[in-house]
Image (cartoon, rainbow, N blue to C red):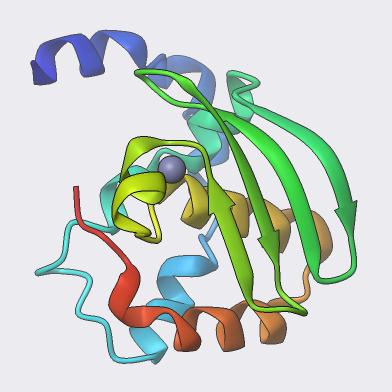
Length: 136
Ligand SMILES: [Zn+2]
């Protein structure tokens, strides 16, 4: 199972960009989330791979709002994060059925930080929904 995941990632493309420091894991650890025991960092670690492989499609981006498509390894999902209204939506089963804050939302937040550098609003949002973050 993990073998197919490894095949899908082209590390040669992402190698240089992987030096980029991720913002969301930094915020989460400042909020007291132990990233070493929770399997959150790994999918976020693929952020630059997602970028390089054009797995993000931004629909709308403005202050405190991002709407995008995230093409994961198993499907493409629509993600909306409204930092002003503290609202999120993802069309994946984790989010729709369990109302969980899934990895696609975290990836969209990382993308938002990368494109807009408005980190304070993201930290506030994550503090609000800390208990809804799912591990995978
Ligand atoms: Zn999702």
